[in-house]
Amino acid sequence: MSEILTFVAKTIYSRIYSKSNMPSSGVNRAVYSAARVHMDCASPKYDIAGAAKILDELSSEGDAGAQYLYSLFLLTGTAVAKDEVSAKELLALSAASGSEDAAQMLEEIRRNGGAEGMDELITLKFKGEQRDTGACEELFNIYEEGRPPVKKDHRTAVRWYTVCAEDDDVHAQSTIGFMYLMGKGVDKDKEKALHWLKKAAENGSADAMYRIGEMYETGRCYTDIDMKQAIAWYQLAAEAGNADAQYAIAVLHAVPKTRAYDRVKAVAYLEMAAESGHSEAQYQLGMLYAYGSGVRRDEAKAVSLLEASCEQGFQQAMVDYANLRLEGDVLQQDLETAARWFGKAAASCNGYAQHALACMYSNGNYFERDDTMAAKYFTDAAEMGEVNSQYCLGCSYYEGRGVEKSEKMAASWFRQASDQGHPGAKAFLGMLYATGAGVEQDAEEGLRLLRESADSGYSDGQYYLGKLFMDGKYVNRNIPRAKRYLSMAAKQGDPDAKALLDRIRTERIR
View 1 (cartoon, rainbow, N blue to C red):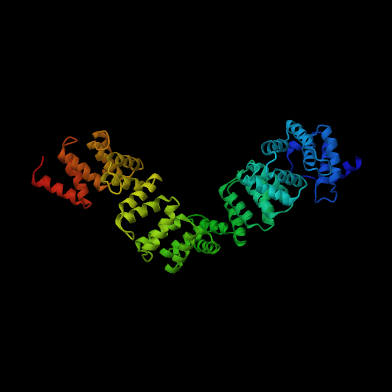
View 2: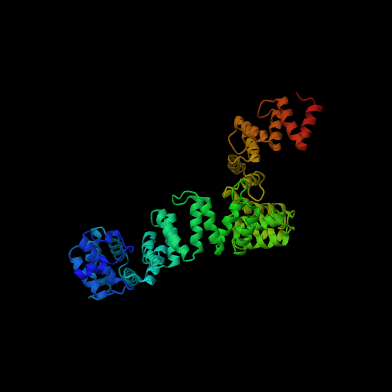
């Protein structure tokens, strides 16, 4: 026993194990640690039979950590006779004493006893406890993804992958650092996040360098914002080929009135990120070349970059590039390309793209005019909350265009668009309230909505309000007010408003 204690005293053994599995007694802790050393497959003192003997003795003394580990010997039949009954008894005792690993193992056996993959899981855990990095990596993947027979458990995943990180696995170091950074399976911990991310960075991980830069830029994980540090780490990551870092620096250099502002550098880093395949950088750079903003205008480069971003599924690129191709002012008009990318974005539930397709069908632009298809896309976009589509769908129901005519449905969609501030919807809904079409008549509410629309400068709202005051059917006739609102609409070129004003003058309506 004295030889074991002497060896342990000279060995720094700070490897990660569940604290609940560690014995409380100082002497037992040293003996338990010695068993761990004997279980470590990379240790020169590796002796699995010796470990089993020590753990058997500690288990009989009620040591929770030893009971959990020795149960794995019994479950696998390694260095001892296989004994599942005794193993389960030890797991129950260990769990009752607070061992989380034992409780988890017991629950997994109870839930999956005899199920395919359970024996493999037990074997992997036994190898993992021997610090077999291949097994630990596989356990990380199993628990991170929730593969049968286990449930997804980020905490357990971190526990196993930390063994790989301690063995200088750069991907594990970066991953564990990120998990501490985000609080994924563990409490957010700035020191541990930086510890592992810096370890990975020292081993050449550009992703880790980027994450550290992100910490300092955003103040993530209780970090004080430090733009100098952020840029320094981003630059290291950018030079190491990290596209996210290249784009991040480009954005920092592109913000006017900041110390980092440098348009030339912003474009240079955008070029790097775009060349590295960063979809948002390709989009941003493509738009710069399209408009000649900060760079010499180059339509061919713009098209190439925007197409590349679209191909990667970046929705903002899809809708903006489609718009440019639809309008034909900045880039050469190409309705087929516009329809293609609006369609791709619409299939991904992009409300703006759905609205654009609806308008193309409604106007017969590229597609044959099809009110039913227009109404379908207006409905898709409206249900996504796209305000212009809500208004257009209200018009479709009011007119019975592409859908069955329904003033009630029209009012419903106008109300939703009106709640989002759409002036046209307010005007139309105001008229419905004033006249009682599709809703319970409420002239006061109708006038309120119409005034809001008219006061915002919307000519139809001004026209409707002027006409109501002129007719005097639903509200008291008021010719001065009618002339006021009709004049406002007429000045904006509304011919119907001008006609009513002429009628008031010629017929001398009072």
